[in-house]
Image 1 (cartoon, one colour):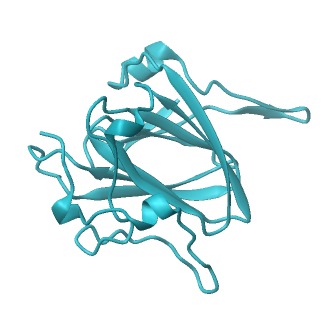
Image 2 (cartoon, one colour):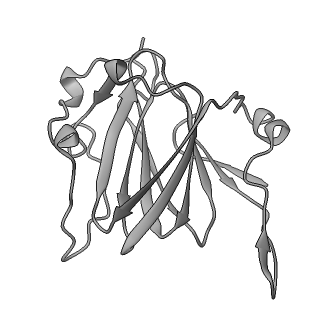
Length: 182
């Protein structure tokens, strides 16, 4: 498995070795020793999967207590996936890294605890899967506005694409008003 660093320390892209032939393909999507060698140590306690249509934007989500690390990937379709550093003590606080994940490239993104997370669906639909290092705790969930000008995330919204967000995401707070990690 190849591992690439992003512009944010700790946010990593994992590019699995895919073995393919006329029957299809096989790949390892998670192997504890490989991931822990790159600083991604579980345990993972919850798996989540979602399906979304083109233009759906989910995020920017995080849990202020019980922070979750997320290992994310796309099973089918394409998304632009974003991690935002929300650690006040970090020199990269308020910076983001984005990568395209797809069923074709089979890449995975590691979003460490202390980061916000969101994604925009670029294809007609996408199946999104992620492993979490802590359980979902709605009482600790926070949302930062996906289009906050201070973050200035370059979401790849194309001509004719309508961005669709949930009520919860529409009500996300400004980065300047967000409760951040220490």
